Length: 302
Length: 302
Image 1 (cartoon, rainbow over the protein chains, first blue to last red):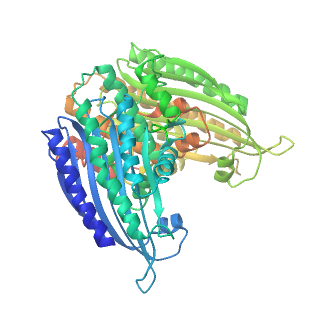
Image 2 (cartoon, chains in turn orange, yellow; image 1 turned 180 degrees about the vertical axis):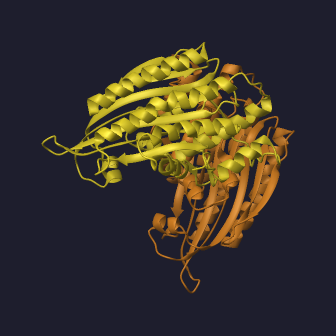
Image 3 (spheres, chains in turn yellow, orange; image 1 turned 135 degrees about the vertical axis):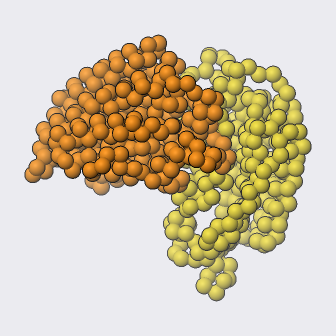
């Protein structure tokens, strides 16, 4: 399974970076290969200062070795060997009318002293962070998520949509990071779902990513915008930074386990502002977004 | 003691904000009074878009009531009543040749059920974060700190300088946030120092703040700078954000105990950049700063 899934994310990385380069039309991804001293490594691909994409990273990694202390605590287990691989991406477009997107698909294995697998699971998801709310885009993104989920189980979309709203919540602001999507973790073999079934589900979601995001980019990338729109985008990106550095388990985990810093923090936006006590104007487009972030919406009536 | 110290920080806030307005010559501090539902409140003063100061806050607060759960855990105590007051300031100048400065002076009391004081201490410090290193400025700042400390005990400057280097350390970058200054905490009555002695020491440091910082501002505020200097400043401010959101106990404590968010996060810089894997040119001024941040210097030979 680990080889099959790593093969899958290698291909998916190629597919996604090719498509993003094609849409951008100017910038190319720069590739950095890195090794983890304790075992494994990764292939980081970063795009900067494009026509469409101001900054973005599409990274894969496959690491293995002794389970670090912090992971032992997280999982509530003792010493063990592990393998983990995944694809992580964050794309920050230049035009404030185009949303930021984040996605991640990962697989984890733990072994006993005889190298038997004692635990294995998938995790991941994809979610959208707009600066201006186009309801059509929100519905398109969520509908694509739902279509992928529904091929496997009608409960997956509502369950993982809810988990996404809960996970990407800036508790100190009492608002969501964005308008959500899917979030799932610890997908383990059960009576109804084998690991093979979960593989099929997770790759179905992975395969839906470009379909979920690219049409939105194409539709909005040439819309006109003002300096005020751009300021609002940079202020909202500040909230993105706050979430990733204060609350995001993946980021903090990476920072505290001596991960490759530049690969972890490629998720941070290029230009960001913090303005004291910024409040959008009453009944503005900015306020409309905030209202939705404070009260997440069911974009698809079930 | 609590009334005396709160009176002191009220006056100090007035003194510091007046002086900063005078130096800026354009912007004025905006004042927000706020109440804490559980008891107490504060006086937040923020300056933005000045001639000299791009963003800064000089805040005081005095809060009291039941010790929140998170503080009980932090201090390793059970339920108790508490009082805490302090002044916190962060100033981000516009010109990259002028350093950012942070300072904080605080006093804490805890009570038994009969309202007797069972514990009390002072804490605080002041530290400098330059974007370009002028050694004269570093020496002036540290010398002013040392002069204030030496009036009380010759060990204070070396001890609290070391604590400052240790505290403001971005472990995930393996570099200091800035070039340090003083940091002290849990200053409690002992055989050699009464609370009155500590009050005299802490206020001595507080009184030295303008002398430590303003001459540096005056000397550097009109230096010419390029867009490249400004970009470097914004990238370094990203490290400031990383420290404050990932490592700073004061910030995280505030975020997790339902403090007034805008007063806590006024410390974040106005314009910030994250550039993937940015490396300064060899033997540049930018590299010179990084070398000092990676290997903190004793600015004053003892």
